[in-house]
Length: 74
Image (cartoon, rainbow, N blue to C red; front, side):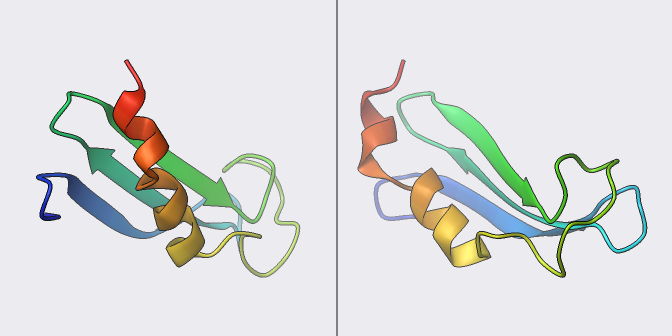
C-alpha cells in the first residue's frame, strides 16, 4: 500500500500459448478507481508469441498505472 492509500498488485503471468508471457499491474485508489493493466509478448494471451518478453517492462507498466492522472478519473 502506498502512503496515499493506493493498493498495488504487480506480477507476471503466463498466456495460453507456449512462450506467451505477460506482466500485470492492478491498482485500487481511495477515490474508488480500480484498474488492471496487462501487457503480453503477443497480441492477445491466446495468440502466438511475438518476442521473448512484452515490449513494456513491469516497472514501466507500474508507472502508467500509478500516474497521478488517474486521480481525476471517474
